[in-house]
Length: 118
Image 1 (cartoon, rainbow, N blue to C red):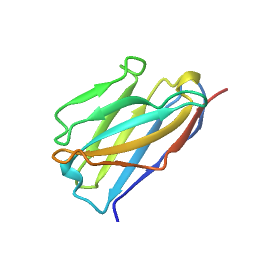
Image 2: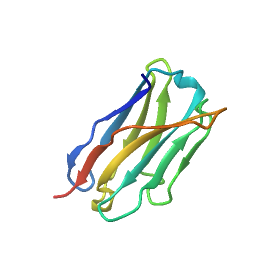
Image 3: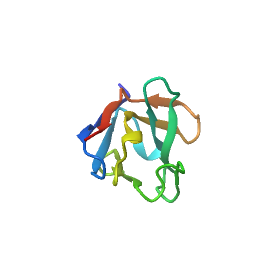
Image 4: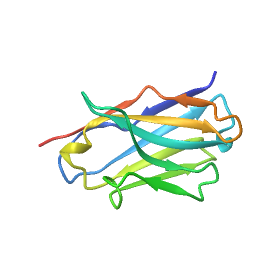
């Protein structure tokens, strides 16, 4: 069974940090590009960061550049999102997505909530 499970969300004060994890199972992780998306209440889901299947390339939304870092550990079948200097506007449900390099098949996780508030 192909599955993505996010973890690491929670409540943090402005300026704080969190590290999200997305654990993959049931498929060959190294064949997939990975991304993090987020969706705030009343807003559309938006791309936060992505990383190629080799890890050689990364891409970030302008709103998170310099604060967030995406990385992957293929030995652990896990992709991470390190979030620093968090702001209230980062509050959202964060989702992990896998896209197969060849077939473009997509798989989504169930999401993890991040709340930035004092």
